Image (cartoon, rainbow over all chains, first blue to last red; front, side, top):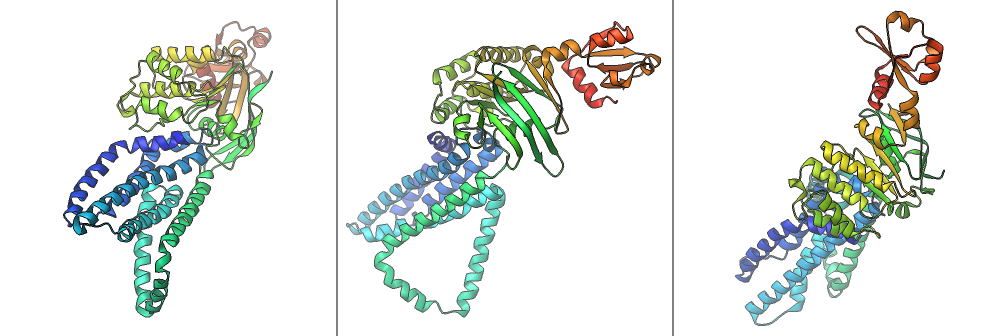
Length: 210
Length: 285
């Protein structure tokens, strides 16, 4: 599997330069207090990893990977692990950046705020990955990309319509009670969703023909 | 003789194509040439062997093991070249080494780089900058560098110039010197197969039409060129197919000696695999 993780990381090697430039530009903007960068880098890292699916399709890699030892299983695991590796690196970077910003502005480091700033975007990005990857394995990159945006758009519209008729205030007040536990709850949800996504992707890829 | 690859009653149905009861045996130490026109089912058969396609019926055994149940063990010992290019073009041959050494237990970087040198392939150029022939050579180098016991090659010589083709064919012949190994070689370039194949299996429209040793085919089969009146004297059971040309009939026969004995016709042309394919597909009975 290590070989296949390497393959994905080597493919995105040239795109990493873009990620570094983005980090530098947004980093400077964030230091000047002009922009919140916490979402950009994790989001970009998943988008860049998604580009490896396009390379795989274009180069007909999937048929070949099936001929490698444990190729089908390892290919899916490698894709998820390579994404997590990249996401971990970007999380470390944005955490460091958030510490610097916090210290520059307040001369103190508020770890609760920093965790909140970092966790939210990382959680959202993992959710995006968790929905996108099985969709890509099932429908291919292009269809999945369009499909997922239609789904997000549809869910947003439906949610806003429902919100007009139902009062969610009491529900959110109840959620407030969980405030002290979010540091435990969010990672559990993240890991569960990601694992479910991985298992679904694995099942789809196991039966796919190339 | 022990078989390195054995296929029994392989069938696979698509909307517009069907692979029907494919039976195939590749004994150890042999090269099997797999021939047929485009869309005949060669690649589909190869994809079934490698489990790239699913939901097929039949049994495929490699090294005596089931190709699906013992997948990991089997694939450690198979070298593959597929008909389409498959390495990500943004990578370099050096990257391929880095990937493969963590993919195959027996990956031999030294051997891989030796092949790169022998094939005059650059190590650090992106694959997309290589010519079609160079890409094919890279795939062949990668297929050979983990000391496989079975090579499954789908059109490995397509895109190669005659010199490179000879080079590659020599490598396959060296490979087969180890009698524990075997090669399944699908190719349109039938002259290559005439030089190296021990067995020929001919597939057409999803069915195996013929499976024999290459020597048996080239020595016993022949083409009789005759006039219409001579042709009309022939017993239908004495030929396989015929083709009517402008001034003569071309008749494909299975046994030159028996035919000569019965009809006293001495001028029987030697057959090539290309003639055989053409007459089997385009000829009539």
